[in-house]
Image (cartoon, rainbow, N blue to C red; front, side, top):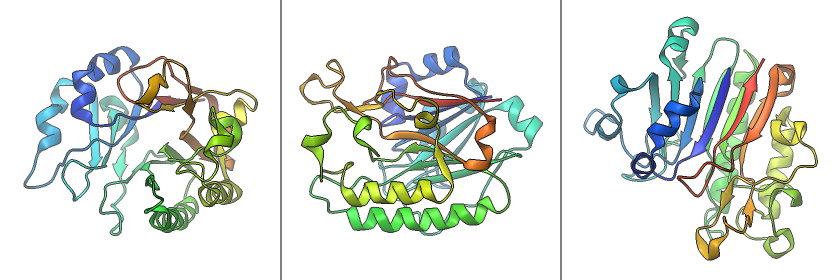
Length: 259
């Protein structure tokens, strides 16, 4: 099974950049996307308007933000997989009004798609982010009592110096602030494993580049998109990879392949 994760920075924008063509060629079994920036509610059907599920091979689950045009997550699951595995969406968390967390019961494990908060340039949302992260971690540890968990998405933090091109210049900045990195340490110490770093301990590869100053062309990037798994599930992780050649967003897809 191949599972991918991609912060598309707006599903409308991604579709204009041939997102659907890429999806048809790549054919992941499951695709988690962040920052869909559209609403899908009883009154608003924006997701259905821009992406007709009948025209794809996927069942689409989503969690939209209450604020229009902001945040939001979605998971694409191959329709035949849904039928075979009886994939179901776990009820949304009441405190997540920004559509940042989407959890599916995949049968043998829970798949959690998360768009972690950005601390913002002035660190105005750093406290919010740490509180959000802690709430999520507590919830995941409760779920993990039932079955293993895969957590993927845009974590909005580069964990170690190897995870960004210019660590010294960015110490204390959003995404490389000591409090964010300490929280990532705590997350991993609680029994989750960073799959890419576990399988590629010395490889420097990035998943996000600023739009400024030709950062992507010069590969001045950050690795802030992850697949983490319960330690007891790591024997099922065959591969972990970053598709940094894929364009269409300021992020690129990351993924795992399960045995």
